[in-house]
Length: 431
Image (cartoon, rainbow, N blue to C red; front, side):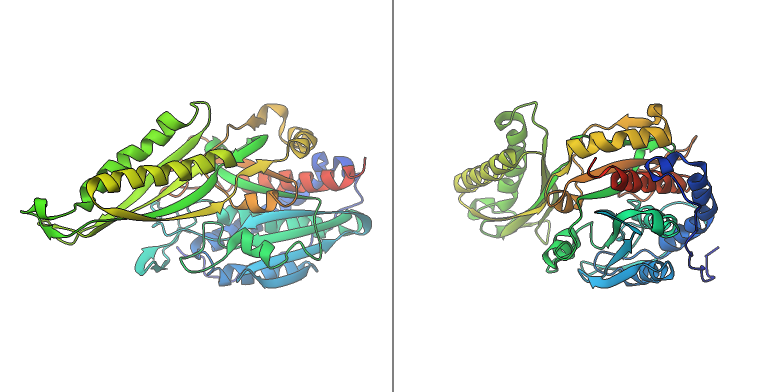
């Protein structure tokens, strides 16, 4: 059944005085998280039932802003359309640290039997689509709301300031719109208050609940998007000799683009060139005038990024000239590499091991998935870790699929780890 009642806003949970340098291991903080977790989980269910697409997160942003205000946190709304910024000023002097959670959902129809599954439908690229949190952003938002509750209850003991960034449009803005982390930075989110570091987390459909992990250095790939238009001459399908066939040229181009990965780049340099959409033609017996190819490029090194784009243009020029046609390509560099600052990573790993146990802190290999957390981490030192979310004895579909599902039991783990990272960072500043 649907969750229809209004959820209560969470007040600050006041803690007794704590030795903050070791607070994350303190049983009183664990007790605070345990007390808050059921209500934060209800909020997660509410967010999950009411997902919103990129740049459309109005209900989600309203919930977040009301929650932060109930904690006595300074709130700024309308950042990069629907983003929310919360400022928690500690009672003791110290640095600024930012924590980021993304709020948007995906045009994916959820496929499970959970009572709080999404049944939302919306318009995306002119089509009616199902919408769901198929990447775990509902967990990210709920965890960060929980962290805000814990920290607000101990604000007088905090040596510094915590900036809570609730970001829209991590999955990418709709065509013709701007959004996400880049727009937040362009609008000056770090102008008045520049953090010394930014922290973030992401659910992980390939890691069991109870484990966390990260990648030192380059962790998630840069993502580029391309649209190629291969142009020829239309003719009857029965008279191909009268055409300049863009379908044949497109087929040759798709295969030839794969030689960039296999023949132009070192086998030790990770990269991906993927054509994910081919569109052309209206009828089985008409050779069309034009075929479109849409796809993505993933790289970890700007020099490799340059080589891939250059070789794509050279290959397309050769293929279309040989076929008698021409091409146009729009190539957009969307998201930079997400890099975990190595010094910051080394500084924070002991916190994760203290909270989770060293055996539950995993070294995660780099992934060619992309994250626009990279914009923030290219501006100030960043640390981005993965939160295991697969319940014992179950499986989850991959991210961005209908059967993706994150375990509720990961929520208090995320709250404890992120709270510990924030406080240990603030306490160790300048040491």
